[in-house]
Amino acid sequence: MKPKGSKDSPAHKAPLTASPPVQHRSGLAWPWGLVAIGTMALAWVGIYLLWNGIVFLFSL
Image 1 (cartoon, rainbow, N blue to C red):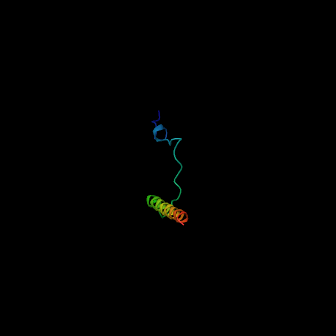
Image 2: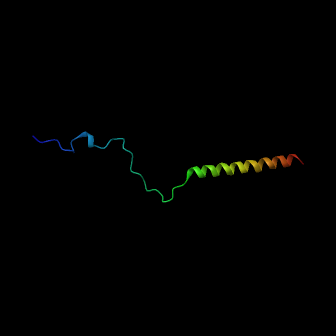
Image 3: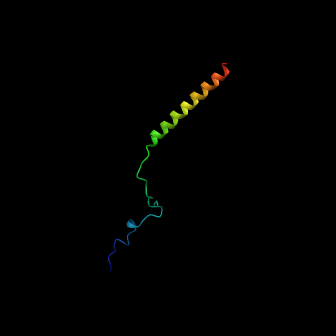
């Protein structure tokens, strides 16, 4: 009688839903929080300038 080896045990088998291996990441990690804050700041500046332009046109 042969003892069960580790290759026969179901605990060591890879699950069927395993995620694929991670692709190569770029060396530069973007600080996405700062990118979002910068984008919102630029949007506020754009809204401010647009509003001032509209007010200027209607105040003539």
